[in-house]
Length: 448
Image (spheres, rainbow, N blue to C red):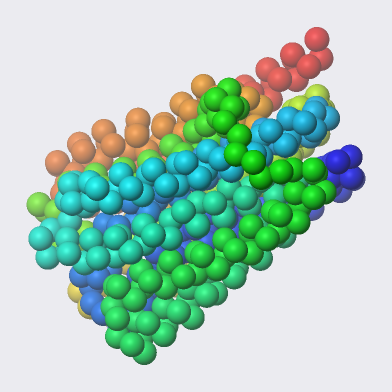
């Protein structure tokens, strides 16, 4: 097991961050890419209502993804800390419990969604026109959700063990398969939304198969058996650590549902389509920043467990620089090519014009939000569960919701787009304050 720690000890921080950030980005990106790829194909080869339908379906898929990432991030952080503390039995216990918890959650949640899908779909803002399209898509996609969830959980566990490449490969296999099968079913066989959903399920099963094979390979190296483990103390620890990640993910779903309901009376189905479209594109930008921040987490957790305050500070400082520079590059690219990006999957000219305007308003100060996400994952890594929970609900739930309700009431649809930069500025300032506090307090405690 000591050999597994060499990756944390011998390489410089920037190389380590890149090595762990890439699978971090990939894990979240590909999990949400399924809906985006489906949106692209149905938008290009079906119609705008199909885009709106998948926009309604997205929060439901986001809920399932959020639960799996909560377990995966919680397990990964626990495993990294245990490695830093050289508690190898605890490493095995955390992985076994994470897999068991993942199976239980990944079976129970889709069943509940299936039972209450009618109420859920309408509560997310679906009109009578869009409802049957959403239901057809969700009923099929739920079948593959178990495989996607377990792929994420296994991937994060393998990352914590020092092999981030496995996650990249398994998720790449699923993503490429989804694109190919989507093309075959949607374009060649004209199966519409149903074909897109079937493609998602097939690709998730294939990606999971590879991840399971690699986990079995690693299990021999760490003497891990796959017996189910029900330790409620460990379950609570995993959930408490990863809960901030869950809130970050599910908050977007809540906001999308709220926006759909708020804007439907003002802009009708067009407003729903615009929300779905800008969410799909901005998602890629936020995922990149969140993924890099999540990639920092095992590095910060390991050094926190090992009591290395200087290395911990270096990890955080470099992560802030990398996320901000990355955010600037992404922001510049999408601002320049906004028309081309949305034109790739929106055929209707009037909808395209309004979507481009709305999108540019929402991301006008995007780069500064990187500080906020680094703050969330840093506080998770150093076991500040209450702080990370507060930060995770701060931007979307505590700030965005009340502000958007007020602005939409007085400004209509435009009020929704202006809400984004306002909350981003406030969140970035707050995140910076909590990073500074956390680093100063930990260094003071460690020096004592």
